[in-house]
Image (cartoon, rainbow, N blue to C red; front, top):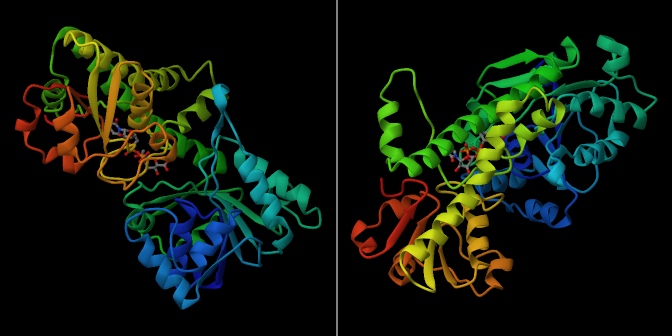
Amino acid sequence: MQTSDIRRVSVVGLGYIGLPTAAMFASRKVQVIGIDVKPDTVDTINRGEVHIVEPDLDIAVRSSTRSGYLRASLTPEPAEAFLIAVPTPFVGDSHEPDLSYIQSACETIAPALVTGNIVILESTSPVGATEHMADWLAELRPDLSFPQKAGENSDIRIAHCPERVLPGHVMQELITNDRVIGGMTERCSEMAVAVYRHFVTGNCVVTTPRTAEMAKLTENSFRDVNIAFANELSLICDKLDINVWELINLANLHPRVNILRPGPGVGGHCIAVDPWFIVAKTPEEAQIIHTARKVNDGKPQWVIDKVVEAVQARGQSTATVACLGVAFKPDIDDLRESPALAIAKKLIATENLNIIVAEPNIDKLPANMAELDVSLHSPEQAIAKADIVLGLVAHREFKALSRDLLDGKTVIDTCAIWE
Ligand code: SAJ
């Protein structure tokens, strides 16, 4: 199978991963049909506009739609390769993975499948999800054969190829990152590699679907565990009256130590979610991974308790708290699963506190915050009005602020803005 044999690709789910991927294929003159369930998203893309913020994505989508290589639709159309990039959240407190979006994507594309097609699951998935996907497709299309029964001779090829790009660097990392390709058979892997070779310059490393699923979960769990270590150190150092940032800098002078940064908690829709997929499958064995999740999820409450203690220490009955940053990490506008946002919301609901928010990366606060009469301030205004300055996200705008602004304020810096 040659890369040039694949002329038409369908991407199902036009979100943070699907849309950049679709635009990337289109930029290589592959005919792309993007499928999404939201009419607004489809219309926006067909106008050449974007509904998500990612550097350079707008330019790529505009030129791909203008050139006619990218088109969005609510309904499936024939293609050689179907890529599924839909959300895989977990269900409530049980943290069990929710595969319903993948199942719906299968229902959407099944009628369009023909012999020789490949279906690639890109969504981060619990181990075994690709096999489930293959079974759902086989049930929907009993007239076609699939690799779980027909092996190398199947009509349809199936693979898992997890996305691994860093929000904020997606358009670059899509091209240069190595890809892990887990085909259900060798031919499945070979065809998946041919698909990605349209734009991937990194290595395409072939394995099984289960190992590919676990590789992705392992990468994000590795990061979660290491951030939990840093967050735990921050609690220990607070008790022992040691500056955790200085401590980490010193420890990192050792050639084999590389501690990550403590913060107000772990956010985003990946690292705070994916480790649960391992815990849900192997609860007895996944002890460190589970504990890391609990440590990181506990950090926002610890920050809130620090604010309450600071108010008491100031001997005030009420206090104004400036929350600096509500995004889920520095220098982005993404508020999804943001610990900083969760902290700000909880503080707003705390009696006797007046909360003001500075977030240079957004123009307006989410509707549910604006309703609570909280408004956005510039960092300088927020600090000037505050008794307590709560550093939640180390945005470059905050790091550039003069320290003189902090005179007379109680500063709680959870993320080393001023270190
Ligand atoms: N964080 C810390 N301390 C650190 C590093 C990060 O508290 O030292 C926090 C951030 O503030 C943020 C959270 O962790 O709240 C996650 O941020 P991140 O930059 O570590 O990762 P994401 O969620 O933006 O992207 C991750 C990446 N995975 C890895 O680096 C292993 C990315 O490559 C994945 O593609 C992405 O998850 C995903 O989609 O799974």
